[in-house]
Length: 253
Length: 358
Image 1: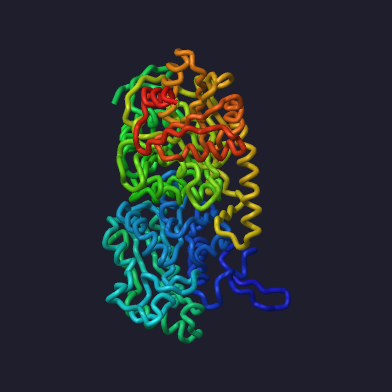
Image 2: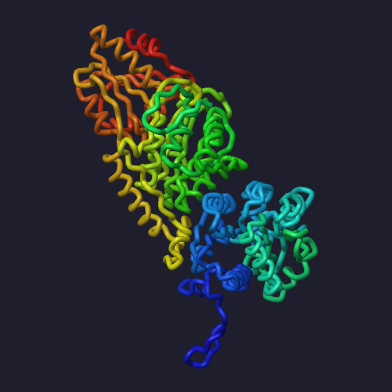
Protein backbone atom coordinates (compact mmCIF):
# COMPACT_ATOMS: atom_id res chain seq x y z
CA UNK A 1 0.00 0.00 0.00
CA UNK A 2 2.55 2.55 1.11
CA UNK A 3 4.91 3.93 -1.46
CA UNK A 4 8.26 5.56 -1.04
CA UNK A 5 8.71 9.07 -2.26
CA UNK A 6 11.90 9.91 -4.09
CA UNK A 7 13.63 11.19 -1.01
CA UNK A 8 12.89 7.95 0.84
CA UNK A 9 10.12 9.40 2.96
CA UNK A 10 7.31 6.96 3.55
CA UNK A 11 4.02 8.29 2.23
CA UNK A 12 1.07 7.50 4.49
CA UNK A 13 -1.32 4.99 2.98
CA UNK A 14 -4.29 6.72 1.45
CA UNK A 15 -7.39 4.88 0.32
CA UNK A 16 -7.47 4.56 -3.46
CA UNK A 17 -10.93 6.16 -3.59
CA UNK A 18 -9.72 9.36 -1.92
CA UNK A 19 -9.50 12.31 -4.26
CA UNK A 20 -5.82 13.14 -4.12
CA UNK A 21 -6.12 16.68 -5.48
CA UNK A 22 -8.14 17.77 -2.46
CA UNK A 23 -5.53 16.54 0.00
CA UNK A 24 -4.43 17.60 2.54
CA UNK A 25 -8.06 17.82 3.55
CA UNK A 26 -9.80 20.88 4.94
CA UNK A 27 -10.70 19.66 8.42
CA UNK A 28 -9.05 21.21 11.47
CA UNK A 29 -5.94 19.55 12.91
CA UNK A 30 -7.02 16.80 15.28
CA UNK A 31 -10.53 16.59 13.84
CA UNK A 32 -12.10 13.13 13.72
CA UNK A 33 -13.73 13.50 10.29
CA UNK A 34 -10.51 12.47 8.54
CA UNK A 35 -10.36 9.19 10.47
CA UNK A 36 -14.02 8.40 9.73
CA UNK A 37 -13.58 9.19 6.05
CA UNK A 38 -10.43 7.09 5.94
CA UNK A 39 -12.37 4.17 7.41
CA UNK A 40 -15.09 4.75 4.81
CA UNK A 41 -12.52 4.98 2.03
CA UNK A 42 -10.86 1.72 3.05
CA UNK A 43 -14.23 -0.04 3.27
CA UNK A 44 -15.15 1.22 -0.22
CA UNK A 45 -11.77 0.08 -1.58
CA UNK A 46 -12.16 -3.37 -0.08
CA UNK A 47 -15.65 -3.76 -1.51
CA UNK A 48 -14.66 -2.38 -4.92
CA UNK A 49 -17.81 -0.26 -5.23
CA UNK A 50 -16.35 3.15 -6.05
CA UNK A 51 -18.17 3.56 -9.35
CA UNK A 52 -21.61 2.80 -7.88
CA UNK A 53 -21.48 5.29 -5.03
CA UNK A 54 -23.27 8.56 -4.58
CA UNK A 55 -21.96 10.30 -1.50
CA UNK A 56 -24.16 13.01 -0.04
CA UNK A 57 -22.74 15.36 2.52
CA UNK A 58 -24.70 17.49 4.90
CA UNK A 59 -24.08 21.09 5.91
CA UNK A 60 -21.91 21.56 8.97
CA UNK A 61 -18.31 20.37 8.99
CA UNK A 62 -19.39 17.38 6.89
CA UNK A 63 -19.85 19.77 3.96
CA UNK A 64 -16.05 19.94 3.73
CA UNK A 65 -16.15 16.37 2.41
CA UNK A 66 -17.72 17.58 -0.86
CA UNK A 67 -14.56 16.85 -2.85
CA UNK A 68 -12.96 14.40 -0.45
CA UNK A 69 -13.50 11.23 -2.49
CA UNK A 70 -12.99 10.20 -6.06
CA UNK A 71 -16.63 9.26 -6.41
CA UNK A 72 -19.77 11.21 -7.24
CA UNK A 73 -20.57 13.60 -4.43
CA UNK A 74 -23.46 15.96 -3.79
CA UNK A 75 -23.59 18.57 -1.10
CA UNK A 76 -27.13 19.03 0.20
CA UNK A 77 -28.72 21.24 2.85
CA UNK A 78 -28.42 21.02 6.63
CA UNK A 79 -30.37 17.95 7.69
CA UNK A 80 -31.53 17.07 4.18
CA UNK A 81 -28.93 14.54 3.10
CA UNK A 82 -31.02 11.58 4.21
CA UNK A 83 -33.98 12.50 1.95
CA UNK A 84 -31.73 13.38 -1.01
CA UNK A 85 -29.99 9.99 -0.85
CA UNK A 86 -33.34 8.30 -0.20
CA UNK A 87 -34.78 9.94 -3.31
CA UNK A 88 -31.81 8.77 -5.38
CA UNK A 89 -32.01 5.21 -4.15
CA UNK A 90 -35.78 5.05 -4.69
CA UNK A 91 -35.30 6.23 -8.26
CA UNK A 92 -32.28 4.08 -9.10
CA UNK A 93 -31.87 0.99 -6.97
CA UNK A 94 -28.45 0.08 -8.37
CA UNK A 95 -26.64 3.00 -6.82
CA UNK A 96 -25.00 2.74 -3.43
CA UNK A 97 -26.15 5.80 -1.51
CA UNK A 98 -24.19 7.11 1.44
CA UNK A 99 -25.48 10.01 3.53
CA UNK A 100 -22.80 11.68 5.63
CA UNK A 101 -23.74 14.10 8.39
CA UNK A 102 -23.02 15.35 11.88
CA UNK A 103 -25.02 14.96 15.06
CA UNK A 104 -26.84 18.27 14.47
CA UNK A 105 -27.86 17.29 10.94
CA UNK A 106 -28.94 13.80 11.94
CA UNK A 107 -30.40 14.23 15.41
CA UNK A 108 -31.76 17.81 15.39
CA UNK A 109 -32.69 19.50 12.10
CA UNK A 110 -32.89 16.24 10.14
CA UNK A 111 -34.15 13.95 12.89
CA UNK A 112 -37.53 13.42 11.26
CA UNK A 113 -35.79 12.26 8.10
CA UNK A 114 -33.45 9.89 9.95
CA UNK A 115 -36.30 8.47 12.01
CA UNK A 116 -38.62 7.93 9.04
CA UNK A 117 -35.90 6.59 6.75
CA UNK A 118 -35.18 4.04 9.49
CA UNK A 119 -38.88 3.21 9.92
CA UNK A 120 -39.25 2.70 6.17
CA UNK A 121 -36.06 0.63 6.11
CA UNK A 122 -34.66 2.71 3.25
CA UNK A 123 -31.87 0.79 1.53
CA UNK A 124 -29.27 3.46 2.14
CA UNK A 125 -26.28 3.89 4.42
CA UNK A 126 -26.18 6.79 6.86
CA UNK A 127 -22.84 7.62 8.45
CA UNK A 128 -22.96 10.15 11.25
CA UNK A 129 -20.05 11.92 12.96
CA UNK A 130 -20.89 12.56 16.60
CA UNK A 131 -18.56 15.17 18.06
CA UNK A 132 -20.91 16.50 20.73
CA UNK A 133 -21.23 19.98 19.27
CA UNK A 134 -21.95 22.13 16.22
CA UNK A 135 -18.42 22.50 14.89
CA UNK A 136 -18.84 24.58 11.75
CA UNK A 137 -20.92 27.27 13.41
CA UNK A 138 -18.50 27.70 16.28
CA UNK A 139 -19.15 25.16 19.00
CA UNK A 140 -22.77 25.44 20.09
CA UNK A 141 -24.54 22.82 22.17
CA UNK A 142 -25.76 19.94 20.05
CA UNK A 143 -28.12 17.02 20.69
CA UNK A 144 -25.12 14.93 21.78
CA UNK A 145 -23.37 17.46 24.05
CA UNK A 146 -22.69 15.74 27.32
CA UNK A 147 -24.38 16.78 30.60
CA UNK A 148 -22.45 19.64 32.10
CA UNK A 149 -20.50 20.21 28.89
CA UNK A 150 -19.59 23.82 28.24
CA UNK A 151 -20.38 25.08 24.77
CA UNK A 152 -21.11 28.49 23.25
CA UNK A 153 -24.82 28.12 23.97
CA UNK A 154 -24.37 26.32 27.30
CA UNK A 155 -21.55 28.44 28.70
CA UNK A 156 -22.22 27.27 32.25
CA UNK A 157 -22.49 23.65 31.22
CA UNK A 158 -25.34 21.70 29.61
CA UNK A 159 -28.23 21.63 32.08
CA UNK A 160 -30.15 18.46 31.35
CA UNK A 161 -33.21 19.78 33.21
CA UNK A 162 -33.45 22.55 30.63
CA UNK A 163 -32.08 20.88 27.54
CA UNK A 164 -32.60 17.15 27.97
CA UNK A 165 -30.03 14.40 27.90
CA UNK A 166 -27.72 13.52 25.02
CA UNK A 167 -29.49 11.93 22.07
CA UNK A 168 -28.72 8.28 21.64
CA UNK A 169 -29.06 8.03 17.88
CA UNK A 170 -28.16 4.42 17.16
CA UNK A 171 -30.38 3.29 20.03
CA UNK A 172 -33.27 5.28 18.54
CA UNK A 173 -32.67 3.92 15.04
CA UNK A 174 -32.28 0.37 16.38
CA UNK A 175 -35.59 0.72 18.22
CA UNK A 176 -37.62 1.71 15.16
CA UNK A 177 -35.96 0.08 12.16
CA UNK A 178 -37.56 -3.13 10.89
CA UNK A 179 -35.81 -6.43 10.37
CA UNK A 180 -32.85 -6.25 8.03
CA UNK A 181 -31.43 -3.03 9.46
CA UNK A 182 -27.82 -2.69 10.51
CA UNK A 183 -27.02 -0.29 13.35
CA UNK A 184 -23.69 0.31 15.07
CA UNK A 185 -21.72 2.88 16.99
CA UNK A 186 -18.01 3.05 16.39
CA UNK A 187 -15.35 5.50 17.44
CA UNK A 188 -12.36 7.17 15.87
CA UNK A 189 -10.44 5.75 18.80
CA UNK A 190 -10.82 2.32 17.22
CA UNK A 191 -10.49 2.92 13.51
CA UNK A 192 -10.20 -0.74 12.58
CA UNK A 193 -13.46 -1.60 14.31
CA UNK A 194 -15.10 1.50 12.78
CA UNK A 195 -14.04 0.42 9.31
CA UNK A 196 -15.56 -3.01 9.99
CA UNK A 197 -18.88 -1.44 11.01
CA UNK A 198 -18.94 0.81 7.94
CA UNK A 199 -18.10 -2.11 5.68
CA UNK A 200 -20.95 -4.14 7.15
CA UNK A 201 -23.28 -1.18 6.74
CA UNK A 202 -22.37 -0.94 3.05
CA UNK A 203 -22.66 -4.70 2.58
CA UNK A 204 -26.10 -4.54 4.16
CA UNK A 205 -27.18 -1.98 1.59
CA UNK A 206 -25.66 -3.99 -1.27
CA UNK A 207 -27.55 -7.07 -0.06
CA UNK A 208 -30.72 -4.98 -0.04
CA UNK A 209 -31.52 -5.98 3.53
CA UNK A 210 -32.54 -2.61 4.87
CA UNK A 211 -31.46 0.61 6.51
CA UNK A 212 -27.83 0.85 7.62
CA UNK A 213 -26.68 3.34 10.20
CA UNK A 214 -23.28 3.91 11.76
CA UNK A 215 -22.51 6.64 14.27
CA UNK A 216 -18.85 7.41 14.88
CA UNK A 217 -17.72 9.08 18.09
CA UNK A 218 -15.36 11.81 17.06
CA UNK A 219 -13.33 14.71 18.39
CA UNK A 220 -13.50 18.45 17.91
CA UNK A 221 -10.41 19.90 19.62
CA UNK A 222 -10.94 23.32 18.04
CA UNK A 223 -14.29 23.91 19.68
CA UNK A 224 -13.75 21.71 22.71
CA UNK A 225 -10.58 23.74 23.29
CA UNK A 226 -8.69 20.59 24.18
CA UNK A 227 -5.16 19.42 23.51
CA UNK A 228 -4.45 16.02 21.99
CA UNK A 229 -4.43 14.18 25.30
CA UNK A 230 -7.64 15.82 26.51
CA UNK A 231 -9.33 15.20 23.19
CA UNK A 232 -8.64 11.48 23.26
CA UNK A 233 -9.68 11.27 26.91
CA UNK A 234 -12.98 12.95 26.11
CA UNK A 235 -13.66 10.59 23.19
CA UNK A 236 -12.54 7.44 24.94
CA UNK A 237 -13.70 8.05 28.51
CA UNK A 238 -16.34 10.79 28.71
CA UNK A 239 -18.31 10.10 25.54
CA UNK A 240 -18.39 6.34 26.00
CA UNK A 241 -20.11 6.78 29.35
CA UNK A 242 -23.22 7.84 27.42
CA UNK A 243 -22.56 6.35 24.03
CA UNK A 244 -21.78 2.64 24.16
CA UNK A 245 -19.63 1.45 21.30
CA UNK A 246 -20.68 -1.70 19.46
CA UNK A 247 -23.24 -3.22 17.14
CA UNK A 248 -26.87 -2.63 18.09
CA UNK A 249 -28.59 -4.37 15.21
CA UNK A 250 -27.47 -6.79 12.56
CA UNK A 251 -29.74 -8.16 9.84
CA UNK A 252 -29.69 -11.49 11.64
CA UNK A 253 -30.75 -10.12 15.04
CA UNK B 1 -61.32 6.25 -11.72
CA UNK B 2 -62.29 6.29 -15.34
CA UNK B 3 -60.61 3.75 -17.61
CA UNK B 4 -58.98 5.81 -20.29
CA UNK B 5 -55.76 5.55 -22.20
CA UNK B 6 -53.24 7.84 -23.76
CA UNK B 7 -53.56 6.22 -27.17
CA UNK B 8 -54.74 8.72 -29.74
CA UNK B 9 -56.79 11.62 -28.50
CA UNK B 10 -59.32 10.93 -25.79
CA UNK B 11 -62.07 13.27 -24.73
CA UNK B 12 -62.38 12.90 -20.96
CA UNK B 13 -64.25 14.47 -18.04
CA UNK B 14 -61.94 14.72 -15.05
CA UNK B 15 -60.97 16.65 -11.95
CA UNK B 16 -57.83 18.75 -12.22
CA UNK B 17 -55.88 16.51 -9.89
CA UNK B 18 -56.67 13.51 -12.05
CA UNK B 19 -55.58 15.47 -15.11
CA UNK B 20 -52.20 16.18 -13.49
CA UNK B 21 -51.62 12.49 -12.77
CA UNK B 22 -52.43 11.57 -16.38
CA UNK B 23 -50.26 14.42 -17.68
CA UNK B 24 -47.33 13.20 -15.60
CA UNK B 25 -47.79 9.72 -17.09
CA UNK B 26 -48.03 11.25 -20.56
CA UNK B 27 -44.83 13.22 -19.92
CA UNK B 28 -43.11 9.94 -18.98
CA UNK B 29 -42.47 11.01 -15.40
CA UNK B 30 -41.14 8.00 -13.54
CA UNK B 31 -41.52 8.75 -9.85
CA UNK B 32 -43.58 10.99 -7.60
CA UNK B 33 -42.66 11.88 -4.04
CA UNK B 34 -45.37 13.47 -1.94
CA UNK B 35 -46.92 14.29 1.38
CA UNK B 36 -50.67 14.69 1.93
CA UNK B 37 -52.11 18.17 1.92
CA UNK B 38 -55.44 19.39 0.60
CA UNK B 39 -56.22 20.27 -2.17
CA UNK B 40 -53.52 18.30 -4.02
CA UNK B 41 -54.09 14.85 -2.45
CA UNK B 42 -55.84 13.26 -5.41
CA UNK B 43 -52.77 13.76 -7.57
CA UNK B 44 -51.14 11.15 -5.34
CA UNK B 45 -54.32 9.07 -5.26
CA UNK B 46 -54.53 8.85 -9.04
CA UNK B 47 -50.79 8.48 -9.50
CA UNK B 48 -50.64 5.52 -7.10
CA UNK B 49 -53.56 3.89 -8.92
CA UNK B 50 -51.89 4.38 -12.30
CA UNK B 51 -48.45 3.37 -10.97
CA UNK B 52 -48.59 -0.45 -11.36
CA UNK B 53 -50.15 -0.22 -14.83
CA UNK B 54 -47.54 2.17 -16.15
CA UNK B 55 -44.52 1.01 -14.14
CA UNK B 56 -44.36 4.17 -12.03
CA UNK B 57 -42.99 4.65 -8.53
CA UNK B 58 -44.25 6.59 -5.55
CA UNK B 59 -42.82 7.46 -2.16
CA UNK B 60 -44.91 9.00 0.60
CA UNK B 61 -42.48 11.01 2.69
CA UNK B 62 -42.55 12.26 6.27
CA UNK B 63 -43.19 15.90 5.31
CA UNK B 64 -42.93 18.34 2.43
CA UNK B 65 -39.31 19.16 3.20
CA UNK B 66 -38.54 15.53 2.54
CA UNK B 67 -40.86 15.36 -0.48
CA UNK B 68 -38.94 18.26 -2.03
CA UNK B 69 -35.50 16.84 -1.29
CA UNK B 70 -36.31 13.25 -2.27
CA UNK B 71 -37.56 14.67 -5.57
CA UNK B 72 -34.19 16.40 -5.98
CA UNK B 73 -32.58 13.03 -5.25
CA UNK B 74 -34.63 11.50 -8.05
CA UNK B 75 -33.63 14.11 -10.62
CA UNK B 76 -29.96 13.84 -9.62
CA UNK B 77 -30.05 10.26 -10.91
CA UNK B 78 -31.56 11.30 -14.23
CA UNK B 79 -35.09 10.30 -13.35
CA UNK B 80 -38.11 12.40 -14.30
CA UNK B 81 -39.44 13.13 -10.84
CA UNK B 82 -42.06 15.45 -9.44
CA UNK B 83 -43.96 16.37 -6.33
CA UNK B 84 -47.14 18.27 -5.53
CA UNK B 85 -48.21 20.43 -2.65
CA UNK B 86 -50.10 23.48 -1.44
CA UNK B 87 -50.03 26.33 1.09
CA UNK B 88 -47.89 25.52 4.13
CA UNK B 89 -46.45 22.60 2.19
CA UNK B 90 -45.37 25.00 -0.55
CA UNK B 91 -43.59 27.01 2.16
CA UNK B 92 -41.67 23.91 3.26
CA UNK B 93 -40.77 23.00 -0.31
CA UNK B 94 -39.09 26.35 -0.91
CA UNK B 95 -35.93 25.01 0.75
CA UNK B 96 -35.53 22.31 -1.88
CA UNK B 97 -36.49 24.77 -4.64
CA UNK B 98 -33.62 27.00 -3.51
CA UNK B 99 -31.17 24.12 -3.82
CA UNK B 100 -32.60 23.37 -7.26
CA UNK B 101 -32.03 26.98 -8.34
CA UNK B 102 -28.46 26.98 -7.11
CA UNK B 103 -27.54 23.53 -8.47
CA UNK B 104 -29.73 23.79 -11.60
CA UNK B 105 -31.84 20.73 -10.86
CA UNK B 106 -34.74 19.97 -13.22
CA UNK B 107 -37.40 19.45 -10.62
CA UNK B 108 -41.13 19.83 -11.27
CA UNK B 109 -43.49 21.06 -8.58
CA UNK B 110 -47.26 21.04 -8.94
CA UNK B 111 -48.81 23.67 -6.67
CA UNK B 112 -52.56 23.62 -5.99
CA UNK B 113 -53.00 26.87 -4.15
CA UNK B 114 -55.22 27.12 -1.09
CA UNK B 115 -56.09 30.11 1.08
CA UNK B 116 -53.43 31.73 3.25
CA UNK B 117 -51.65 32.84 5.33
CA UNK B 118 -51.15 29.91 7.70
CA UNK B 119 -53.46 26.92 7.40
CA UNK B 120 -56.33 29.23 6.32
CA UNK B 121 -58.61 27.33 3.92
CA UNK B 122 -58.17 24.08 2.08
CA UNK B 123 -60.25 25.47 -0.74
CA UNK B 124 -58.77 28.07 -3.00
CA UNK B 125 -56.54 31.10 -3.37
CA UNK B 126 -53.94 32.81 -5.53
CA UNK B 127 -51.85 33.79 -2.56
CA UNK B 128 -48.92 31.56 -3.39
CA UNK B 129 -48.01 33.54 -6.47
CA UNK B 130 -45.21 35.52 -4.82
CA UNK B 131 -43.99 32.45 -2.93
CA UNK B 132 -43.94 30.26 -6.01
CA UNK B 133 -42.27 32.89 -8.19
CA UNK B 134 -39.81 34.32 -5.70
CA UNK B 135 -39.67 32.03 -2.64
CA UNK B 136 -36.39 31.01 -1.10
CA UNK B 137 -33.25 32.94 -0.22
CA UNK B 138 -32.39 33.78 -3.79
CA UNK B 139 -33.45 35.47 -6.99
CA UNK B 140 -36.44 33.43 -8.10
CA UNK B 141 -34.78 31.48 -10.89
CA UNK B 142 -37.89 29.49 -11.64
CA UNK B 143 -40.30 28.85 -14.46
CA UNK B 144 -43.91 29.20 -13.29
CA UNK B 145 -46.92 28.33 -15.44
CA UNK B 146 -50.35 29.52 -14.36
CA UNK B 147 -52.95 27.27 -16.00
CA UNK B 148 -56.58 28.35 -16.32
CA UNK B 149 -58.35 25.30 -17.75
CA UNK B 150 -58.02 21.56 -17.39
CA UNK B 151 -56.61 21.47 -20.89
CA UNK B 152 -53.93 23.87 -19.64
CA UNK B 153 -53.25 21.61 -16.67
CA UNK B 154 -52.59 18.71 -19.02
CA UNK B 155 -50.62 20.66 -21.63
CA UNK B 156 -48.50 22.68 -19.20
CA UNK B 157 -47.70 19.79 -16.89
CA UNK B 158 -46.18 18.00 -19.90
CA UNK B 159 -44.43 21.21 -20.88
CA UNK B 160 -43.13 21.75 -17.33
CA UNK B 161 -41.10 18.54 -17.52
CA UNK B 162 -39.70 19.55 -20.90
CA UNK B 163 -38.79 23.05 -19.72
CA UNK B 164 -37.19 21.75 -16.50
CA UNK B 165 -35.02 19.23 -18.35
CA UNK B 166 -34.15 21.73 -21.09
CA UNK B 167 -33.24 24.76 -18.99
CA UNK B 168 -32.43 23.09 -15.64
CA UNK B 169 -34.38 25.53 -13.53
CA UNK B 170 -37.07 24.38 -11.08
CA UNK B 171 -40.41 24.49 -12.87
CA UNK B 172 -43.81 24.98 -11.29
CA UNK B 173 -47.38 24.45 -12.40
CA UNK B 174 -49.30 26.95 -10.30
CA UNK B 175 -52.84 25.62 -10.10
CA UNK B 176 -55.36 26.07 -7.34
CA UNK B 177 -57.97 24.25 -5.32
CA UNK B 178 -60.80 25.04 -7.73
CA UNK B 179 -58.88 23.61 -10.64
CA UNK B 180 -57.81 20.67 -8.50
CA UNK B 181 -61.31 19.63 -7.47
CA UNK B 182 -63.43 20.83 -10.37
CA UNK B 183 -64.40 18.40 -13.13
CA UNK B 184 -64.44 19.51 -16.75
CA UNK B 185 -63.91 18.11 -20.22
CA UNK B 186 -60.53 18.09 -21.92
CA UNK B 187 -58.57 16.11 -24.46
CA UNK B 188 -55.73 13.93 -23.25
CA UNK B 189 -53.16 12.50 -25.61
CA UNK B 190 -49.75 10.97 -26.02
CA UNK B 191 -47.55 14.01 -26.68
CA UNK B 192 -45.12 12.05 -28.84
CA UNK B 193 -47.94 10.91 -31.12
CA UNK B 194 -48.71 14.58 -31.63
CA UNK B 195 -45.12 15.36 -32.47
CA UNK B 196 -44.30 16.96 -29.11
CA UNK B 197 -40.78 15.84 -28.33
CA UNK B 198 -40.26 14.74 -24.74
CA UNK B 199 -36.90 15.88 -23.43
CA UNK B 200 -34.91 12.89 -22.24
CA UNK B 201 -33.61 13.06 -18.67
CA UNK B 202 -29.91 12.54 -18.08
CA UNK B 203 -28.09 11.49 -14.91
CA UNK B 204 -26.51 14.44 -13.12
CA UNK B 205 -24.57 12.07 -10.86
CA UNK B 206 -24.28 8.29 -10.63
CA UNK B 207 -24.40 7.52 -14.34
CA UNK B 208 -23.85 3.82 -13.66
CA UNK B 209 -23.85 3.07 -17.36
CA UNK B 210 -20.53 4.96 -17.55
CA UNK B 211 -18.21 3.32 -14.99
CA UNK B 212 -15.23 5.30 -16.35
CA UNK B 213 -17.07 8.61 -15.97
CA UNK B 214 -15.35 11.64 -14.51
CA UNK B 215 -16.13 12.07 -10.85
CA UNK B 216 -18.67 14.79 -10.09
CA UNK B 217 -18.22 16.98 -7.04
CA UNK B 218 -21.33 19.14 -6.75
CA UNK B 219 -21.73 21.75 -4.08
CA UNK B 220 -23.99 24.60 -3.09
CA UNK B 221 -21.85 26.00 -0.27
CA UNK B 222 -19.13 28.29 -1.55
CA UNK B 223 -16.02 29.76 -0.04
CA UNK B 224 -16.09 33.33 -1.31
CA UNK B 225 -18.45 36.07 -2.38
CA UNK B 226 -16.76 36.17 -5.75
CA UNK B 227 -17.32 32.47 -6.40
CA UNK B 228 -21.02 32.92 -5.68
CA UNK B 229 -21.22 36.04 -7.81
CA UNK B 230 -19.66 34.22 -10.78
CA UNK B 231 -22.20 31.41 -10.50
CA UNK B 232 -25.12 33.77 -10.15
CA UNK B 233 -24.01 35.84 -13.11
CA UNK B 234 -24.16 32.63 -15.13
CA UNK B 235 -27.58 31.69 -13.78
CA UNK B 236 -28.87 35.21 -14.41
CA UNK B 237 -27.59 35.22 -17.99
CA UNK B 238 -29.19 31.81 -18.63
CA UNK B 239 -32.44 32.96 -17.07
CA UNK B 240 -32.48 36.20 -19.06
CA UNK B 241 -31.82 34.27 -22.25
CA UNK B 242 -34.61 31.78 -21.70
CA UNK B 243 -37.13 34.43 -20.64
CA UNK B 244 -37.80 35.85 -24.08
CA UNK B 245 -37.96 32.33 -25.53
CA UNK B 246 -40.43 30.78 -23.14
CA UNK B 247 -42.80 33.54 -22.02
CA UNK B 248 -46.41 32.76 -22.86
CA UNK B 249 -49.45 34.97 -22.72
CA UNK B 250 -52.90 35.43 -24.14
CA UNK B 251 -53.97 38.88 -25.31
CA UNK B 252 -57.32 39.60 -26.90
CA UNK B 253 -58.64 42.85 -28.35
CA UNK B 254 -56.00 44.93 -26.59
CA UNK B 255 -55.11 47.00 -29.69
CA UNK B 256 -58.01 49.44 -29.40
CA UNK B 257 -58.90 48.83 -25.75
CA UNK B 258 -59.49 51.68 -23.31
CA UNK B 259 -59.31 49.26 -20.42
CA UNK B 260 -57.35 46.00 -20.28
CA UNK B 261 -58.24 43.33 -17.74
CA UNK B 262 -55.15 41.56 -16.39
CA UNK B 263 -55.52 38.32 -14.46
CA UNK B 264 -53.93 34.89 -14.26
CA UNK B 265 -54.94 31.32 -13.59
CA UNK B 266 -58.54 30.44 -12.95
CA UNK B 267 -59.49 34.11 -12.46
CA UNK B 268 -58.61 34.75 -16.08
CA UNK B 269 -61.58 32.58 -17.03
CA UNK B 270 -63.86 34.98 -15.19
CA UNK B 271 -62.01 37.85 -16.82
CA UNK B 272 -62.49 36.30 -20.24
CA UNK B 273 -66.23 36.00 -19.65
CA UNK B 274 -66.51 39.59 -18.45
CA UNK B 275 -64.41 40.91 -21.34
CA UNK B 276 -66.59 39.12 -23.90
CA UNK B 277 -69.80 40.42 -22.39
CA UNK B 278 -68.48 43.99 -22.23
CA UNK B 279 -67.17 43.79 -25.80
CA UNK B 280 -70.58 42.55 -26.94
CA UNK B 281 -71.99 45.71 -25.42
CA UNK B 282 -69.60 47.70 -27.57
CA UNK B 283 -67.22 48.67 -24.75
CA UNK B 284 -63.55 48.87 -25.65
CA UNK B 285 -62.26 46.25 -23.25
CA UNK B 286 -59.16 44.10 -23.72
CA UNK B 287 -58.04 40.94 -22.07
CA UNK B 288 -54.49 40.02 -21.04
CA UNK B 289 -53.41 36.86 -19.28
CA UNK B 290 -49.82 35.98 -18.42
CA UNK B 291 -49.50 32.19 -18.79
CA UNK B 292 -45.94 32.28 -17.51
CA UNK B 293 -46.09 34.42 -14.38
CA UNK B 294 -42.34 33.91 -14.02
CA UNK B 295 -40.67 34.85 -16.29
CA UNK B 296 -43.31 37.49 -16.93
CA UNK B 297 -44.33 38.56 -20.46
CA UNK B 298 -43.21 42.14 -19.84
CA UNK B 299 -42.87 43.35 -23.42
CA UNK B 300 -46.16 41.75 -24.38
CA UNK B 301 -48.03 43.44 -21.53
CA UNK B 302 -46.42 46.78 -22.40
CA UNK B 303 -47.48 46.31 -26.00
CA UNK B 304 -51.00 45.23 -25.03
CA UNK B 305 -51.54 48.25 -22.78
CA UNK B 306 -49.87 50.86 -25.02
CA UNK B 307 -53.08 52.56 -26.06
CA UNK B 308 -55.11 51.82 -22.92
CA UNK B 309 -56.23 54.39 -20.40
CA UNK B 310 -56.75 51.99 -17.56
CA UNK B 311 -55.67 48.58 -16.33
CA UNK B 312 -58.00 46.41 -14.33
CA UNK B 313 -56.14 43.81 -12.25
CA UNK B 314 -58.26 41.03 -10.76
CA UNK B 315 -56.81 38.34 -8.51
CA UNK B 316 -57.69 36.13 -5.54
CA UNK B 317 -54.86 37.66 -3.52
CA UNK B 318 -54.18 41.07 -2.09
CA UNK B 319 -51.91 42.45 -4.75
CA UNK B 320 -49.46 39.66 -5.60
CA UNK B 321 -50.11 39.78 -9.33
CA UNK B 322 -50.60 43.54 -9.01
CA UNK B 323 -47.03 43.98 -7.72
CA UNK B 324 -45.64 41.91 -10.57
CA UNK B 325 -47.65 43.95 -13.09
CA UNK B 326 -46.57 47.28 -11.57
CA UNK B 327 -42.97 46.16 -11.56
CA UNK B 328 -43.16 45.14 -15.20
CA UNK B 329 -44.85 48.37 -16.26
CA UNK B 330 -42.41 50.62 -14.43
CA UNK B 331 -42.52 54.11 -15.89
CA UNK B 332 -46.08 53.78 -17.13
CA UNK B 333 -48.60 56.30 -15.85
CA UNK B 334 -51.52 54.07 -16.63
CA UNK B 335 -54.22 54.12 -13.98
CA UNK B 336 -54.63 50.72 -12.32
CA UNK B 337 -57.95 49.64 -10.88
CA UNK B 338 -57.38 46.71 -8.57
CA UNK B 339 -59.92 44.03 -7.71
CA UNK B 340 -58.26 42.15 -4.90
CA UNK B 341 -60.08 39.28 -3.18
CA UNK B 342 -57.55 37.26 -1.15
CA UNK B 343 -58.54 33.60 -0.92
CA UNK B 344 -61.92 34.20 -2.53
CA UNK B 345 -63.16 33.19 -5.96
CA UNK B 346 -64.03 35.82 -8.55
CA UNK B 347 -66.85 35.41 -11.06
CA UNK B 348 -67.40 36.93 -14.48
CA UNK B 349 -70.41 38.83 -13.13
CA UNK B 350 -68.37 40.40 -10.36
CA UNK B 351 -65.70 41.60 -12.78
CA UNK B 352 -68.42 42.77 -15.16
CA UNK B 353 -70.15 44.70 -12.38
CA UNK B 354 -66.93 46.29 -11.14
CA UNK B 355 -65.94 47.44 -14.61
CA UNK B 356 -69.48 48.63 -15.44
CA UNK B 357 -69.38 50.85 -12.35
CA UNK B 358 -66.24 52.66 -13.51
